[in-house]
Image 1 (cartoon, one colour):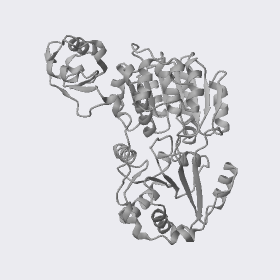
Image 2 (cartoon, helix red, strand yellow):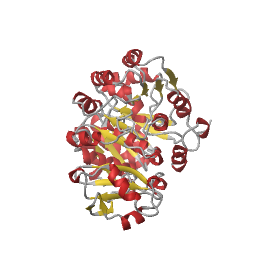
Image 3 (tube, helix red, strand yellow):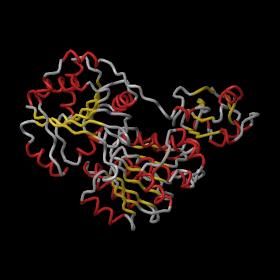
Length: 475
């Protein structure tokens, strides 16, 4: 089956081909038709299998672009994943001019409240903040047709069950609910029976097993840092994620690697939000070779070609192992997952092997210590080249900034009217418009940006400063 055979909007087909989507992946081939036909879905599929597009494509297909209230709600366990899903929606929906909004904690509530007053097609958020908006009636659920619970098992591991159930009670009686999870514990089975109606059950865990080579080593706790340095010198990964059990442990490993001049960044929940997001962006763009993190980074984050995963600390609960190693071996890439097992990990190891259904393949740690630490000099810089497939989507699109918004009583219709008065520009050349308190942004399509910048002087009779937005493409 091809995307064309799914009878998708040509604007979606154009975006998919521009992004390099050639044929639907197995999860997309099964999920997209079910959501398009209005069926609830339970999807058990590993991370990195293409599942975000499997729900984004049919939701974008069925959005009513002129509707102001949100029509889809996607719940995720972390803000990083919320932003990533927003990016996927924005890319696939570029030519349909959809508007998405991420909402999560540690962001000013009042700014989110103002954004929710504007046209918004899809809301992507973490359960706590989404519930806050519903309770304070700043998020209107009345037009929501789709609810997606992404990484559902991880949301429940993070004790979001009560919030998720409270959110579902606010949803309209008639809507499609889709539950995506890498694992399917009993609590999710009970929840699906309660909130999903005759769902299509799609299990792709056996057909899309990650292409990951697994290794394990017995390492005494006091020797772990030295072993890690020798391991990196032996493997020389172009990209690597190292998972630790606590924030303090992340800091320790990060400082060890930084002291040895390895190209490294870190992420954990104790960092400022902007710093976390900045470090993740740097790693995803190939600017940094190694990322040390807690399990906050194991949940659904899509990083191109993570060559190696190191479980510096054994995962707990055992299901976390699946999410961690899922960072590597994504889609058609091969990866390597290495676990370090200390003298106190006996019970964790047994529980993990029982969960996996096979024994961890232990190797001789003595061979690792034979590696030359001088090789670490080659890890000082990242040589990874990451191709941004979305760049082609930006061709012909200019984001324009106007230094006036609600404070000057400017509405989206005023901006459309003023732009359409310019010779050679029509409403089809205008993309997403954001009117904020003191400024506005508008996407100009079809290479008409320079024409608009040259000729647009006033909005609603008011002279404004109008220029190309500094942040370029994206909203």
